Length: 168
Length: 130
Image 1: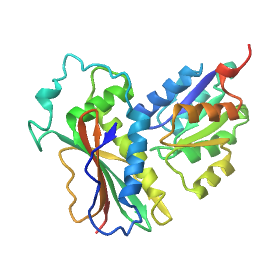
Image 2: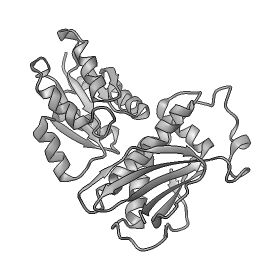
Image 3: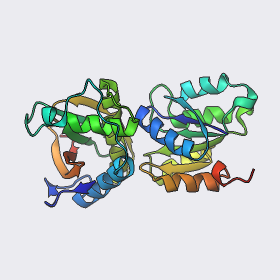
C-alpha cells in the first residue's frame, strides 16, 4: 500500500486536534497492518471484473463509504470511502473468501473505519466514545458536518479516502 | 491449546484467528461478550480455552463487561484475558486491567506484536518445549 504523491489536503481548521499528518499515519498503519501485500483470493464466479465495475469507468455510482461517530467533548465523524471493487477486494483479503456477500463488505469496511476511528478518538479531547460503524452504498454526504482533514491512499491501485468531519 | 476470539467484526475474528492458528492455537469465536459467555459455558472443563482475545466496543455485551463477568466465575479463573481493541487512552487501559484483563493490545497491531504479547503471557505454543 502506498500513499498518493500529492500531499494530503487540509480542508479546514482542526478543532479536533487531528492533523493531516496524524490521519495519514493512522491510515497508513491500518492499511499496512491489515491489508498489506498478501494472498488475495480471486473473485468468485459471481463477481464482475475490476474493469467492469471500476469506479473510474462509472464514477459516482459504485462508491461505498463507512462512517463512525465520535461522541463526547468533541463530536464528529470518521469516514472511509472507496469503490465497491476496492471494498470487495479488501473483504476477500481480510476474510480470505472468494465470494463476498454484502454483509462481508459491510463488516470489512466497517472494521477499517472502526480502527481508524478509535485511533482518531485518542487524539480528541476526552471524554469521548465511539459509535458503531455504518456502511452504505454511495458517496459520503456530509450534511452540515464541517471538514477537518482528509487523506488519500492508493491501495492496490484503488483510491481510498479517509476523512474526519466535525459535527455542526 | 484453545483460544476464544471475541470481536463483533467477522473480518477481525478471521484475522486474529489466523494469527493465533499460526501460533498453534485451536480457535473458537464469539461475536459479543454474551455469546462468549455462552461458548465458555458450553465447554467441559478440559475444553476451556486458555486465552480470550476481547474487543471492547461490541453490541449486546461489551468487552469490559465480559471481563468483569468472566472474572466473577471461579470456573474461568485460569482463563487469560487479552483486550484487543482500538481503545488506546491510558484511562481505558487502566480500567480494563483493573477489571481483570491480563494484557492489552491496541489495533492496528502486527503479528509480531501479538506474538510478543503471547510470549509475555507464557502462552506461545510455538515457543514451548514439549
